[in-house]
Length: 116
Image (tube, rainbow, N blue to C red; front, top):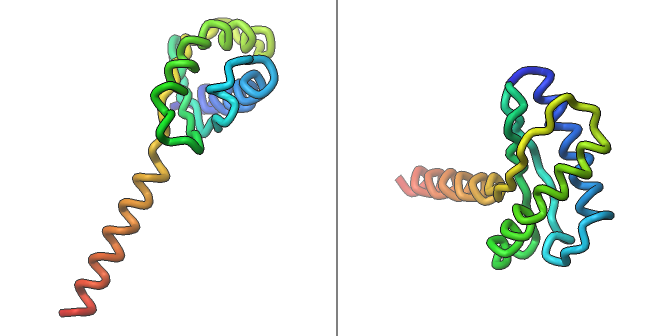
């Protein structure tokens, strides 16, 4: 990922967060946090990673976000000066759960070593 795409992704995180908070009317997306955005080098696609406090509703939230993607792209094109607007798709960011799982494994290994 180049510096340009990182900068664009960072700007997208900020602007999409604003759009979701102030312009999208769907109640399913109100408690969503945008964690990161990966933009391809040719600016064709942007993967937006999100988290929500309601893990049981994540499928419904992702469906709502992906249904609103065209509206979000349109609003984003008004806020960000970019030659080509990437196609946006939303994905669940499971990095915190993954980190907790790794931390639990490390604790298990440490406790096993203390017993031996």
